[in-house]
Length: 395
Figure 1 (cartoon, rainbow, N blue to C red):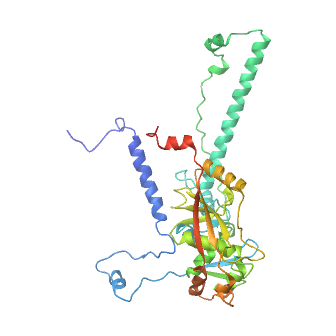
Figure 2: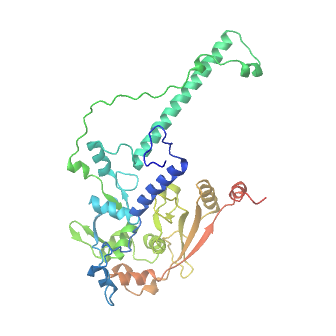
Figure 3: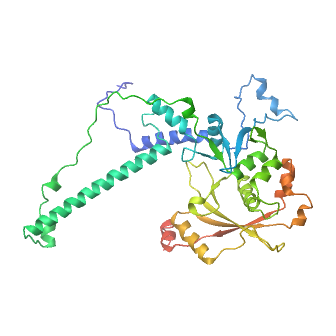
């Protein structure tokens, strides 16, 4: 007889397929948080057949509401634009992986972590990146301690055998029964009774310590799209004033401008671009949200002066074969591809007498960027064993 009830004793354990489906549902929930990248505007209104707001943007000449720009403060000491609001910082991070939390690895999670500590929440259901790092370090320390203990027991066994004059043949030593110390079963971790422990109390000023830092390239890109307002000493900066603060010269080969042309090129393709300092390159390019993907390409920017020959070249023009070999080996170890991006630097005469940093509107700055051309060169090192492993059918 078919029954809707099932006893707990006969309930089967969840299979690997069920665990995979649960993991996929959890990942789908997380991906939904990163499904709206800037600068693409998402309509927050829900679809309703009987609501006039659902159809008013379908009329000719109408457009969806443009979001209010975020507000950031320019910090000359760190050369970054700081977002102090926790809500804005989390929203900017989720909508395109912009910036970095000052007290976190990437996403600004300081307030969430400290609030959970103060309230006793997050019973290890979903660990943050910082908690995962601490847990891995603890497991690594326990593993090293256990390994040192086994090595010490092995040295004591060998020393005791030498003192007793025992010299067994390697084959006999392998067949010999293990000693009592090695027969000890693995100890199971005992569940320690939870004791009442005072939860820490954090003030509001302590929870507001973290800010989201935007790099000059990220801030200029959002500024150019009217999605960010930058202030300094309680005064709002114009686009021209901000350009004068992030650049050093008015020359067309200013290092920041040359690098921003490359950053602008990839960001316009809806790719996530982050600094590549940890891999000794200029940029890292992600084709998806950072929590789910790794950077597929590493970018190095090189200036090309074929249009003019200045006496002093500010942008990097060339690289040695030793550097290329170094990058090739490094990229092969981390499974990434190296891209050399050459930027054709225009002549100063192409800008006219006006300083390009005096652009007051996004359209004027867009004309400056359009004077540059880039060429991409893919540089890879073929590893025979890895290529064979990737294509097992080939012989």
